[in-house]
Amino acid sequence: MGVLSGIRVLEFEAIGPGPFGAMLLADMGADVLRIDRPVAPDDLGPKSNGKRIDVTGRGRRSVTLDLKQPEAVESALTLMSRADVVIEGFRPGTMERLGLGPDSAFARNPKLVYGRMTGWGQTGPLAARAGHDLNYIALSGVLSGIGRADAAPVAPLNLVGDYGGGGMLLALGVVSALLNVQRGGAGQVVDAAMIEGAAQLGAVVWGMLASGNWREQRQSNLLDGGTPWYDSYRTKDGHYMAVGAVESRFYKELIDKLGLADANLPKQHDRNGWPVLRERFEAAFLSRTRDEWCAVFEGSDACVAPVLAFSEAPAHPQHRARGSFVEVAGVVQPGPAPRFSATPSKIARPAPERGEHGLDALRDWGFDASSVARLREGGLGYQS
Image (cartoon, rainbow, N blue to C red; front, side, top):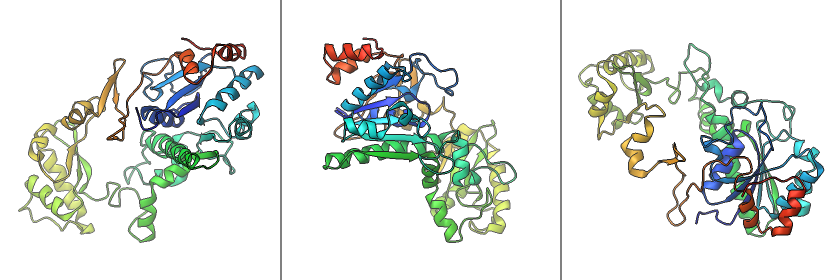
């Protein structure tokens, strides 16, 4: 039984951060029921709904509703009355126009936690505008610090906005609001905005900026590849090694392992000497293959690691030892995290087809045969 066992989550079909947050809750044991459209939209982003490769869709069951129909809206409200959590990722005002906004939901279920996932937030001059991860992290300030000094900012996949600053923030907010309800508090809206979550992920940089220890130029600082001892270096076979030897004792070990202990190098923190250090590090790493350097740094505290491809990572001994990756329906994917000692998380099932396991979910949510029939009359579709 997972740590969130017994919690019912009603998720409205979306892409990106909302499904990721719901995945986290499902992995931790929540019973997540997704309301899908009857037919997949053509322009709902790079979603693979209905296929087992939709990793962020794992762990839940599905019913379908055409929310443009009044009867379907009533069915959705009935489901809300049985839920502990609602997760939606529409533009602000959409759920209200459908008759499914927080006021309507709280009228049926005052203890409901209503999670809203957007890029800009529910208010403000940009609230109604379209956007994607890259837009949100651009306006947060974070994107400006990612990339090389002589090039444009680099898109860090969609990890900073959609997932780190979006879905994880949403999941934290939902669980915190649930805890408040369990302590006797009222239900409430969780307004999770990716632009704000991305800014929070950059909190350490604002501290360094205020202290004068951050230059607003890419590749000029400790954590942005500006220092030669916190960067990645190409190896003889075209792969890369990542170096993070920040502390002096780890830096000393790095120098020793690179064979540069007697090379009369500039001091570690001499900014004027960094070009020389970088040149020497580049030459050293180019002298051997990635695997050869892995052997050199095996068991070392020099803070050096190979840069693995997505396809390579699951085979690393550290991941194998902890079972960090699992295979579900033939798809290798990250397993649940974090680890719980008494209530371990698990992946209940792969992503559902539209309506798959819906009838079982309704029964588990306490709907008897007559109630299920009424939902069916209201346009709700499901498979057993």
